[in-house]
Structure formats: C-alpha cells, structure tokens
Image (cartoon, rainbow, N blue to C red; front, side, top):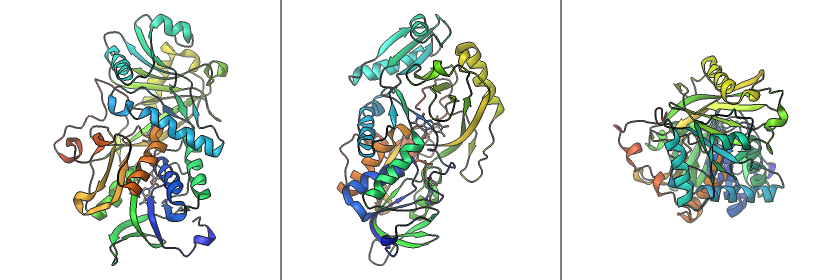
Length: 409
Ligand SMILES: Cc1cc2nc3c(=O)[nH]c(=O)nc-3n(C[C@H](O)[C@H](O)[C@H](O)COP(=O)(O)OP(=O)(O)OC[C@H]3O[C@@H](n4cnc5c(N)ncnc54)[C@H](O)[C@@H]3O)c2cc1C
C-alpha cells in the first residue's frame, strides 16, 4: 500500500476514483487539477499491474474513426494528452501517421466510412491506391487490390507511461493514491455521503468515479446496477524484426487493415519491444477472474501468415505475445453516466468498450467535469446507459464486429 504520510489518517475526500488504470489515472489527474488534495484514488493491485486493459508500450491513437460520435472527440483527445505532456515534460503521443487499409470489394466500404467521417468533421486525410501505399511505404508489398486512407496525426500513445504520468502529476497536485486496496462495495453512510468499503478500511466521499474496467459490475452491483459487459482475452504479438530501421516511428505508420472477418492492426517499434501486431476483438469471452495469460497460437499463426504476404520484413522471432482484456458493451460504444436512475446520482462511471486508451486522458477530464460541474463541455450524449444496447436485455450483441469489421481500436 502506498500512502502519503500527511494523508495517513484521512478518511473523507470530496471525490474517490475507484480503479487506477488508464481512465482512472486520467480522472485522478484532471480532478487533482480542479480540487488538489480532495481526491483519493484506490487501486486493487499494484499500480502499473498487467491484469487490466491499459498496460503496454503503445496503443493506437488516431483522428480517424468510421463514425461521428468518436470523430467529434478525437481532436480533443490530442489536446488533453498535450496538456499532460506539457505539464510532465514527457512525450506520450507520437504522430507516426495512420493508415486504414481496405481490400477492393471486400472492405473498401470501411475505408470510405473513415474518409466520410473525417470530411464531415474537417479532418484532413488522403486517399491512396494500393500502388501509392507501396510507393510511400515500400514495407507493404505491392497490391493493386488495396485502397487506403492516410491521416497524418494517427500514431501511438505510450500507455504505460501515460498511466504513471497521470498518477505522478496527480500526486504532485496533492491527490492521494492507495494501491493494493480493493474496493469491496459502496454504501450510503449516516450523513448521506458515500461509504467506500475497502480491504484497508472505509473511506467516505461526496462522489465516486468508477473506472474499474473488467471489474466494473463487481462494484456497480453494490448500488443495484448491472451493465451488460463482455470481457474478452485479446493478445498482441511483438516480433524481433531484424529490419528495425524500416519500422521506426519516423518511417512506419500505425495501420489498421480491414479483412473480411476482422481487423488486423500494427504499430511501429516503441520502447524496448519489437514490431507489434494484433487482431481486434476476436478473443474468447472470459472474466477478469477466470482469464488466463496464455497466448493463443492460432491467432499468432494468423498474424504471421498475414505478415508473410503483406508486410514480410515486419517478421522476426516472437519476442512476446501479451494477453490483455477488452471490456466491451454490446454495441462496443462507451458508457459514461451516473447511476441516478438507481438513486445514486453521485456515482459516475465510465466503461471504455475495448478502444478507450487513446481517450484515457480526455475521458478523465470528462469525468472530472461531471464530478465537479455536474455536466461536461464534450459531446457524450451517445454514451448514456439509457440507450438500447445497454437497457434492452434482448439487444443483439455485435462487439466482435465480424463480417463487417469496423475496428474501433
Ligand atoms: C490487446 C489490447 C489492445 C488495445 N489496443 C488499443 C489501442 O490501440 N487503442 C486504444 O485506444 N485502445 C486500445 N485498447 C483498449 C484500451 O486499452 C482500454 O479500453 C483501456 O485501456 C481501458 O482502460 P480502463 O481504465 O477502463 O481499464 P483498466 O486499465 O483495466 O483499469 C481498471 C482498473 O480498475 C482497477 N479496479 C477494478 N476493480 C477495482 C476495485 N474493486 N477496487 C480497486 N481497483 C479496482 C483494476 O485493477 C484496474 O487497474 C486495447 C486493449 C487491449 C487489451
């Protein structure tokens, strides 16, 4: 357990953030800018643990989304990260350029959707033929059957560093962060405030911000709320390419390649790792408690076969296949709401739906505004828990997005 000595005896905070992963650490930071020492972060494991969704060298960040609700937010996410970079003096976002690649007659309607959403939101982009793609990035084999949309701001965000920077800046602003401290439940105390029960004692606060990822329903359950969430075990593989120079951040972009049945994505080398590749949302459904950390050799083979034909120099010996959890809603869109319908308008929660790291800082800012101001300046109305995908138990789940793949990574 980590605790600042001057806060040792303190049990009341205006705000308590439950879960200090990507989004929770963002909420801590943005809240601490508003309220200084009046915020407490509680994390069940050690800070920086690898059991959730946010701990890796890199995550994709991009302006381009195939729909408006995220494309309206993406410019703000860059702004939020740049404020964190300015305050910490550390670079977190690398604009490598980003590609959305489709196959003619198979998945080019998806690249067209990216282009449409960007045009509608005044984001500049370029259409590339397969030949232009190869000319600009000869690492891709020449394939006239491909089309691509290029956006210059696409790139990577250093997730592991982002989390620790958020936490360190928050502590610098006076926030308290206690790790190895699971929250077991919430209840109403005699004064009408929230009692946050943990294995280390009870804390009290005016508002709770719940950012518990795959464990969300464990805590929500104690206030009578259940969100339909599907936890899947995903994985990424790092290859020790001998052609490192071809895959540095200044020579190679982040890419998402839309196959007929799924999306494959890749990121340039960042940190003490190799070329990185993964398949979006094809992992088995599991739970945070029953998941394994075992790589799936079938998915490793799929990406190797893909690379052999499309991006052969990316390959090398496997350095590591890292498993990780997606926590997805039935429509794969975020949920950002309060539990007001259940009498808990002072409990605010956020589910990232398996594509939220790029937004982690912005979501933290949004949550801080909801907590302090009771409203946010950002357009989050599509993410209400009242929508059909969350409120209708018969809603047809389509989070795998197979057959009409539209990666949200
Ligand atoms: C393989 C993979 C690749 C991905 N790639 C991308 C990408 O390229 N771009 C992108 O934008 N997104 C990507 N994502 C998704 C993104 O990483 C997640 O959506 C995001 O990181 C989730 O953040 P979170 O804070 O909700 O969850 P987490 O980071 O899991 O944080 C939840 C935290 O809450 C803590 N917690 C839970 N319950 C309690 C409790 N009761 N008491 C105290 N603490 C508790 C947990 O221990 C955990 O630390 C990827 C995810 C995976 C798995």
